[in-house]
Length: 347
Image (cartoon, rainbow, N blue to C red):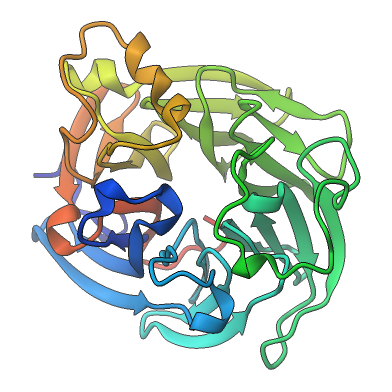
């Protein structure tokens, strides 16, 4: 099932959510009922639930079907920094003991949280096109020390500071839809879905044009940063030149005439070996988000043809090494992938 016997290459925490019954008939922001974290052991072909989460009613929209799921997390050592639509949770590994919690009125459709080298937290509130730097959590409180719009405007130009956006079901359509944060050489970056790029928040003018399709992720590995695109590409960019060096089409590697799924979530094992997440394609009221399907030559499938899963690719030989279905274990959407064996930096 796999070409590697190293535990660090075959055991992963997969972060995402479980959908409700009848989710096809609901808007995107109402489809998921709980956050879910699985441990996948590829060689054994096994999977077990490590954590699940249902947000308190006070911090979600006043809607019985308000979406609850985990979006992209960050692992550093024995801490996993996770987020829901409106919350940040910190777990101690491997027990998954909750050791931190934060929810602010500015949190709407939060997509990623990560600690910084200086001990603060970066949180991207996608619903407000906003990135906030927050002081370490103390008894559930956190002070915002810096904030940036994902666009070149005042962070609160289009929004009202007095509003509790946790109670707002959706602010779509988003102008930028920032969805992932990374830090490199002391600078903070955010990946922007709509602009198909990554923008440096702390060094204005620096950007990486991804361009292939709408991107997710931003995993720093050495002097390179790895992105995924929704239509199944891995994009590798240089941090020294702020430009893309390589684009790998996973559709071509798999060789299927079916859509691979919504591609999001990547873990870099080695420069040419990655584990990528795919979420089953489902009908969406935001139809333009699936317009890329129309441009893929030869696709006979329609949304909903392949299950949610993680897959390992060797980019040097352009081969699919293994796949593991997570949908059969209750996970309908994948947001991030992390090694079970501890590393020594953000991932």
